[in-house]
Length: 221
Image (cartoon, rainbow, N blue to C red; front, side, top):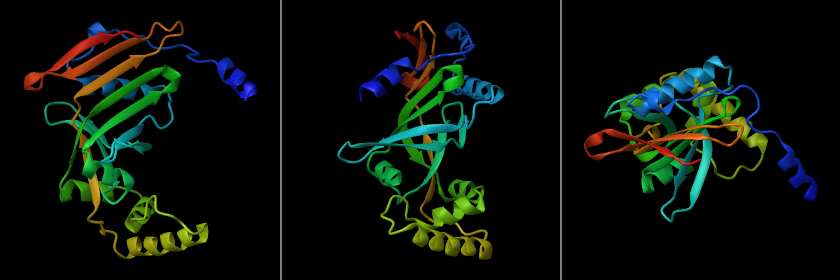
């Protein structure tokens, strides 16, 4: 245990050349700044920059978190951050009970983090179906099973079930499970965190004010 503690304390953080961040020049809408940072992560070669941790809670308040892929982000009063899930999954059940989520993006080479939280709204059948059909055949086959997070007897059982589901996808490429849902996080808060080697981190938080306008404020590191 002591060796692990020493190893962890010795690992380098915030290495390399880090980008500048001037909060005074940030746009009025957090989705616009998020898009700038996301495109910057893409240009910097960050792997899977659209991956995010989605945190939810069940009816008793017990939290769960997992990494999902961002599907879209749109500015404006009707915009938000989107992801998709099967409503019978753990996250889908959480969102049915408590329609609220937190999203966390971390682009390690740039020492940049974005945190978003707010109520979650499910989309209708049309947008949800369009999202499902845009997935790869393998991803659709797995989702059609509707068994995520349930107990699995062995890997052979998994492989057999997925093979059968993939055959269904090949026979009916337009097949969409009714439980597949596209969700939008209507952010109440969005924080942008720029790390600094000397720990002089810069934090800018957007908070939704009355009437829907955004208010910006700096936070202590």
